[in-house]
Image (cartoon, rainbow, N blue to C red):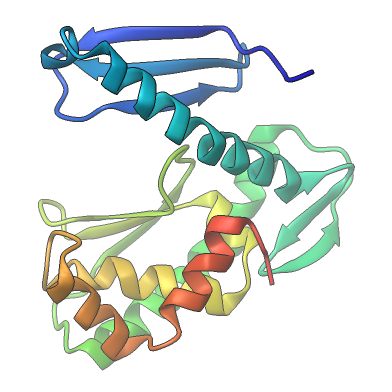
Length: 195
């Protein structure tokens, strides 16, 4: 018998359908654009497709920190009994210097002359964000659980947005030019394989 999750569907002024998991009450929240009011079977199809991927990500995140052990740079480390806030603080402390160095390293290789501000914070649905407005790249604390090779693939992905803002072919041409094994690392990232 499967797990039953309480769920809420909200019609909002949003562009795309989205499905999120709330850890606080272990519920699901779907945000749906108003124009789907008359296309509820499409909403149902979206949720059926998105739910398995979402639950896989939730499970992978829970496995990052389990029973007093935490993955840091792809290796398990004993850290004792920590709260979620303490785990995130530890990952930020460990990861920020590394990410600053890697962003500077790949910026030089990719010909990006203006230095990016680098931030690390808790994000539920993304591994990284490149903001053109603030000229900054922000990475999720969860990223620090993965091996340096996987982390570098995300660094290159975010810096590639300096040249191409969307995810079309031209964007991936930039990514593959500077990180040829991107697909292999991205697969590991999505599957929650830390090393």
